[in-house]
Length: 392
Ligand SMILES: NC(=O)c1ccc[n+]([C@@H]2O[C@H](COP(=O)([O-])OP(=O)(O)OC[C@H]3O[C@@H](n4cnc5c(N)ncnc54)[C@H](OP(=O)(O)O)[C@@H]3O)[C@@H](O)[C@H]2O)c1
View 1 (spheres, helix red, strand yellow):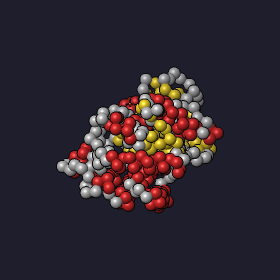
View 2 (cartoon, protein in one colour):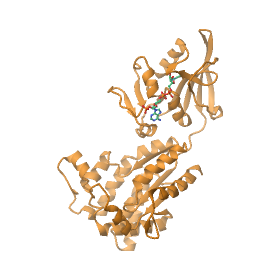
View 3 (cartoon, helix red, strand yellow):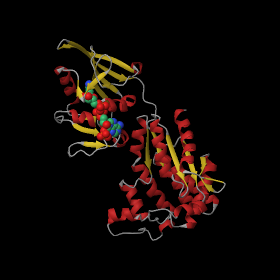
View 4 (cartoon, protein in one colour):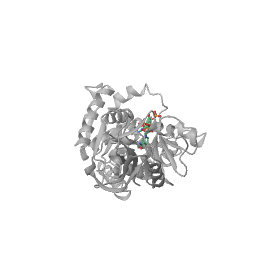
């Protein structure tokens, strides 16, 4: 899949005014039609609203946080949700300013109509570094006394891969909250970053874990109507070799989403990854030699056999069990079989610390002299560490 921007711009990168086009160039519109016919086009909500009619013979995708009442139009809340869908076909980005800005740094090709004129505008095409592209002049034209050139730009070098960052944590350490705060802050810094949470409960493999193994009531209701509690008699004590495969299958099944983002130069923050499997399964094995063997089995299974990429860094949010119990009293959600099991959680905690020591994870303490640290304070530490890693 390629990302291709197509735009008509003036001498000062002018794009539009009052949510309309500013140039009247019918042959250029023909050029746009020829290049996008039977293709998938992506646009922002304003551009969608500016169209007099739906674009015929094109699959239309609109980036918006609103609901569009038209079953033929696909919407995504942001570019990351779009890219996670690993489209096989090329995506033609057709504007406007906000959407061009979103994709300019991760585009493979640009079709630019360079118009030799200036005019008043309120939206502009973003500045881009032409030296990153090979330039091909397609044709020169004059229409309505305006001269313009169609130029194709092809990116010279492959995009640098995004960084893969895994956030692990003991019970009640606030992984999900920390991940979402981190994402928000990094995006404010104009860093391209997305997140994926495992198990991915909204995918079939994640739903199997959530409903059948963990007995999460809201998933049971959704998928199986009546069920509550684990479908496995053993619950948290399930044979680790069975559980490993369930969790590993979820990551393997959703691996294309991770790769689609990383290959596009987008950094990915993982809320839980392979280490969770190691800590949770390994934690149940009291014999150290056997536990270390289990870590190796999981590493082999997930990284070697299932070909998951190794994370560039793993951060362990460490909330000691005693403090986790205090926090748990305020939780709204009904605990699943694992969250209710004291022995399981204590063993998991030991395993996490052992893994951090073995594999050099960066431990972020969620307490300070037994006092629980503020969410913002923990996030400050995590944010600076991750930003440094991404910026290099
Ligand atoms: N010359 C050309 O080739 C050309 C081509 C296309 C458009 N245009 C012109 O460009 C102007 C419109 O540009 P514009 O910047 O105002 O609007 P736009 O990019 O078309 O749409 C902006 C809206 O789209 C949504 N959106 C954009 N990026 C998003 C993202 N990454 N994630 C989620 N939602 C996103 C937001 O809508 P919500 O608030 O609904 O979330 C945002 O308010 C018009 O004048 C149009 O005629 C010119």
